[in-house]
Image (cartoon, rainbow, N blue to C red; front, side):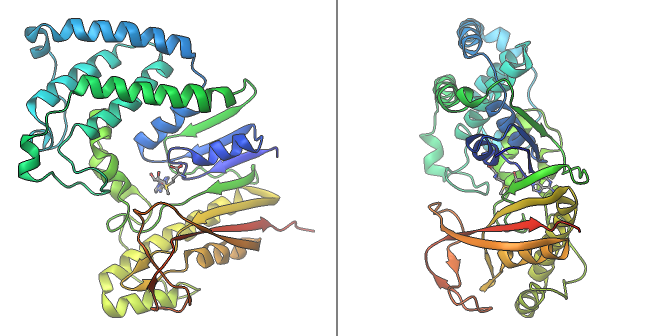
Length: 367
Ligand SMILES: C[S@@+](CC[C@H](N)C(=O)[O-])C[C@H]1O[C@@H](n2cnc3c(N)ncnc32)[C@H](O)[C@@H]1O
């Protein structure tokens, strides 16, 4: 496969990994979450593995030297992280601050970015948040007392894991003729520029489902992003609507939700309204004969299963595409909402296998 691939919600970049496997050479991604952009940039930027290891050695020595002197540590500025004492012990704050201080001293931007990935993982692991939860919850009182992580040890363990994955999986695929451009912004349309869009758009209203902003808030704040706490509101569906969507496939489902909870119906409307507008922009940016591949989950709100796959197909059809096929695929990720509707009737739900839908459309050629 050749040509230009677009992912308007690239997150940590799984579409680029698929693109590389298919032999694509030119890929473009957008995301508004700085941590997601950082992760995908690091994965898909060619950085000398030898230089990374050399820097790790110097960095480690400098770090340990510095930690020997309590007075040096006191000279470092306290980071601007909301409720820092609620989420981190003093010892953890001290160690994370020192690690960040030495990362900031790395001159080479690609290497510095690489060092920030294990850093962001360390921040989360060493905070008092409960693991394996999408939203931020603090550990129980009795668990706090026993929680005394070896921050520096955690950091280097994470570094080595990230390095292993990068050097064995991503680096070998990054040939010199491959161009992967990832921007920290919302999607910027370009008429007829891309051959294919491959994406998994946000799942739903950010306040109630997977809160990407919250999920990465700590790391973003430690990374120095001063609007970290506002990211949730900037995500798709993050700004409320005052009206409900009243036409198209989704209207009946929203009206069902509205009878149970009008506020949730407005949230859901906001999400589909944003998704619809975004599809219009994306559709314009695809060449005639080009393909769109959207991977979505049909989540359930107030017991009503929302046919996002059909919504996506409908919107692309409204924008000059033909719906070719929708594949269903079993999901292994147990953390997703686990209800779905085998009958596909509004309101009928059952606990069953988790599915994701791959919606494939093609832009019609104008004669
Ligand atoms: C389902 S995730 C994509 C996951 C991705 N395929 C990956 O490999 O990580 C959706 C992404 O959309 C981003 N997002 C949400 N609203 C956005 C918007 N308005 N503009 C750009 N990106 C947005 C989120 O930050 C999130 O990273």
